[in-house]
Every structure is written in C-alpha cells, then in structure tokens.
View 1 (cartoon, one colour):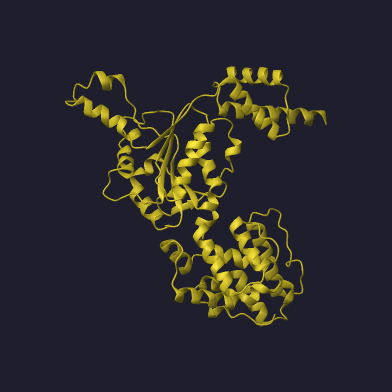
View 2 (spheres, rainbow, N blue to C red):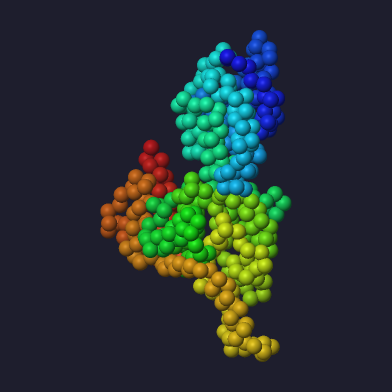
Length: 419
C-alpha cells in the first residue's frame, strides 16, 4: 500500500471511525505481524459480504456500501436542497475521499496474505443498482473529486441510509419510518389485464415524479383484482426515479401531520402514502384526519407526497338506508349524507377494477402456470379453472393465483411419489 490511511482525519464521514471492520483493519496495519488480526478482519468482511450481497473487491465494495448508506451532512444537504451543496462542503467531502483513497484503490491482497477477497462472489448478490453504479465509477480512471460528484448524484437519486436501501416502509409511532426488507417484488408485467387501469395509475405517478400536477388516487372495485398489487408494483418500477412507498394503517391516520413532516425532509424523493383496503364504519372518525390532509388542512401537504388508497367500497364511509330514510335526530339530513361521500370525492383520480371475465380469468392462470414451466391444453385449463372458481370465492385474480399454487403443489407432490 503506497500510503497508510489515517481515518482520524475524516471530516464528513466520521461514522467510519466507529466501524468494527475498519477498526480491525487499522489495528492490523499498525501491527502487520499480527496474523490473528488479519484473519479477524477477513472473516468479518466475508460476513458482511454475505449479509449485504457484496461482490468483487470486498474492501472497496464494503467502503462504497458504507459511504452510500451512512447518514452524513452531505447526504442531508443534498436532500434539503435537491442536489446543491456549498463549495466548502464539497471540498471537505473530497478531502475525506482522499483519506480513503488508498483503501479504495488497492486490492485487499496488497496488504493481506489472502487473495480471495480481491474478487469475491457471495451466495446471493443483492447489491442495489445505485451502489453497483458507484463500483463502475471506480473501475474507470477516477479521482476523489469525481467520486465525490458521483456520490452526491447517488444521494440525490437514491438518498442515503434506509431511504436508499428500501423500496417500501411502514410507519412506527416510536421509530418513524421502518424499511420493509422483504418487500414483494411484483412488477406490472406480472399483472394480467386491466391495461387501462394500469395506464392511468402509471401516468399519474410519472407526472408526480416529473414534478407535474398529479392526483391522489382511489383504486376501487372487486376483491382480488390486483388493486394492492398495482400500487406495490409502482414502488418496484420507479424506485430508481426516487419513488418510495409508505404503508400506514387506519389507526395511524391521527399521526398524518407527523408523517408528513418526516417525509417533507426528504425533498429529493417522492412518497406514496398507501392505505390498503380502506373503509370506515359510521362511528369511526379517523377519516376526518384523512380528509384534512388531502385537502383543506391548515398545513399544506408536501409536494413530494401523494395518497393512494384501495377499497372494495366506492364510498369509503359506510352508509345505511336508515341513514337516508331515518335520521330522526338529524336536522339537516342532506349535510350528513354529503359528509359520508365527501371523503371519496377528495381523491382526484378514482380507478375502477371490475371482476375479470372468464377469458381474462383463464389467461391469468395460464400466465402464472407458464411462468413456472407448466403448459396446460386449453380445454383442460378451462375445466380445471372453472371447477376451482365454482368451489371457491368466485372469479378474480386472487382465486386464479390460489389455483396455480394448488396445482403446482399437487404436481410436485405427485412427482415426489413417483420418485
């Protein structure tokens, strides 16, 4: 190694001083005859590679992963200013990368007796596209200044920490945003049919991401038709464009002001607040928080937040015939009726999902079977699909997927018995 790094000189990335793996490396570089410390460092680096899916030059990959995901003042400034940082802050960032440059340029075998860390392949490579792009920068001629600019662009596009690592989040009253590690990897190509509905949803979302006017969306219709899956697919399709999904529950609607204030701080990202299977009984008052947030509250909704909700009800607040015909205690009955339908009207875009017809239902089954390498003759597919539909909860996408799961499970069981 041409120059031994002194991590205590770091200004922006001082969280690296508390990193166990780098502390282990520093201890070894101070005492290169300590073989025990060398293998301790290598073992910890391999553990990290398997946990985070790091590959190639492991030390470089690990450092890039930390630089991309650790919170620092450069990343926070990029979020607040949508990409602009002061010249002085940029200089301090370049200084840190000059300190780290020896570790980023060398292969681990340059200072270890092991070569397997130079080009490591993990059991599952799960490195995000953004960090893979940063690795690409270091495979070409680079300088600390170029890397600083690449990291700044990364922070603008992906964020840092959990915001850069997760597509979807849940809200926790104590800890705030919690990343969902095992988020469903569904894409729009997995959703058969509903072309006009998907086009409307995507067009509205792309307008939102481009900074153009966009509406809050209510996806309403028959159960099992892919309403929730469509919203989840958005997070997978447009993650690299800065879209993130935040799922909240009905009891958490009272926390909407706090949630909005949290999301407002991530000005370079766009968030969809996702309310799944939303409806209210007439005695539930949480809907008032939602109404106020969508339109009419004292504090404006952040420009980087939209609300998408799914429901089986066109009118989200339950209304009975007694509400219409009775109302003995209600002086202004029309006002009460307007109150029950006003929430749905606050969603600027309402997308309707009907139950699939028989051909669409069978097409969904056929698609998912083919995705698993199974092709059924059309007549057999029709007979089995109709039989399953009649024995279960009717014709919809969820029923089709349940049939596919059952069929594949039985097929594998028969193959096992044959063996």
